[in-house]
Image 1: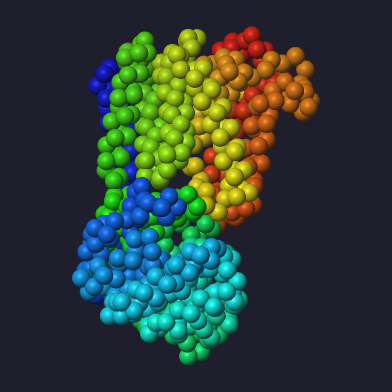
Image 2: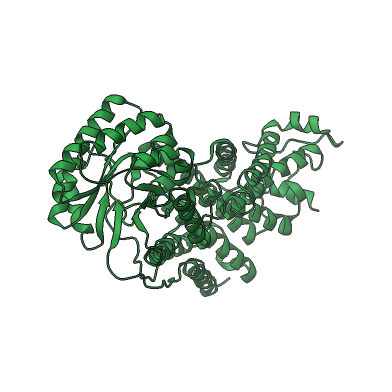
Length: 572
C-alpha cells in the first residue's frame, strides 16, 4: 500500500474525529436574562489546597480578590461561617458595595457552635450597614447534628442580640418536617436543588419542581417571607436519574431560574460563586463543581450565552488526532509490510481503531486531570489511565499485525501486558460497580475510562474472527490480542466433551467470577439507577461489553478448540 493512501485514510479519520468533538460542543444559545446583577451567591472563597477539613483557610487578601471579582456580578453574598477567615468578609464587602448574609455554622460540637454564634453576633453588630440578614445554621436538622430544640435555642439567642432579621436554612422539606422552627425566625430560608431531590428532575423540569416546592412552603406558612437560600446546578459529576451535570445544563438552569425569579418576585441566593475542590472528599466530583467560577477564578460561562459544553474541545481534538496519526505511523514503522501490503479497507479499520482509542484516552485524561482533587484520587485515576493506555497500545499493535497479514503467527510485544491490563481493569470495574450499587450517591460512573476495554477490545476480537475464524477463542483477551490461547489469563483447554457449569467454574474460576460479577453489576446498576439515567445505562452497557472476553473464555473452557491449537488452525 502506498504511503499517500495511508495518509489519506488518516486524514479522513481526523475529519471524523473533528465531527466527534465538534458536534457535542456546538455553541448553545440562551435567552438573555433580566439586566442587572444576581441577587446573591454563596461565598466560600477556598482555593486549591485550602479546606475547612484541613483547617487551611483563605487569606484576607484572597478574600478581597474574590469580592472584587464579584462586585460587578452580584448584589450580596452568603457566608456559612463567621470564623475561619470569613470574619473579614463584611469589612471587605463594604469596600465593593456588597451586602452580606452572615452565616453561623452549627454542627455537632457545642463549643464550636458557641464560638460561631458569638462571632456572628459580633459581626452583625459591628457591620449593620453591610450585614442585612443573619442565618443561624445550615441544614443542621438534615444532618441531624442538633435536635430541633437545641437549634431553636441558638436561634433565640442570636435574635436577642442582633437587630437584623434572623433565619435558619435547610432543604425545603425539612421545614414541613419541623414547622415549629418557622415560629422562631423572621423569614424562612429554603434550599431548592432539583439535582439532589429524592426524585431528581432534568433541567427542563426544574422550573416546575421549584415552583411546586415554593408554593407548598408558602401555603404552609402564609405571610412568612421566603428566601430561596440555595439554588443551583453542578457542572461535573455523576448523573442522577434525568438530572445530567454539565456546563450547558448549569447555564440553562441558572438562566431560566433568574428569569423565573424576576417574574415570580423570588428572593434568592445562587450556590455558589466558586468551585470547591475540597468538597470532593465528602461529596465526590459533583460536590466540587457548583461554582459560577472555577477554582482558578475563571468564569465558566455567560448567562447570556452562547455556552459550549467543553470549552477545550479544539485542544482535545488536536491532541487526539495527533496521537492517532503518531500511533499509526509508529505501527507502520514497526509492522513489517504494513505500508506495502495493507489493503484500503483494512487501513480504514486500523485508522478508525487508532483514532477512536486516541480520543477515548484524551477524554479519560481530561477527566482524570480536571476531576481529581486529592493526591489519592489523582494516583487512582493515573493508574487506571495507565492500564487503559497499555491495553490501547496492545490492541493497536495486534490490529496492525492482523490487518497487514491475517495468516501471520507472530505475537506482539505488548500482548501479555495488554492481557494483564484488561483483567485488572475488569476487576476494578467489578469493585467500582459494587460501590455504585451499594453506596453510589457521590460516586462517578467510569465511562471514559472503559471505552477501550469495553469497545475497542471486542472490536478487535470481531475483526480477528472475521479474518481468521476461531469462534469464541478470538474474543478472549489473549486470543483477540494474539490469535492464540494462553497468556496471564488463558482460556483453559477442553477435554473434548462439554463441561458442566461447575466444571467450567473449576476450569476457569477467574473468568467465571469476572463474567458473573460484571453481568450482575450491569443488572444491579439498571435496577438501582433506573432506565432514565443515560450515564448509568452507558456504564451498564460497557460492563456487558467488558465481560465479552471473559465470557468467551468460559465458552472455550466448556468445550471447543484445544489449548495446543491456535485460532488459525482452528479455522481451517
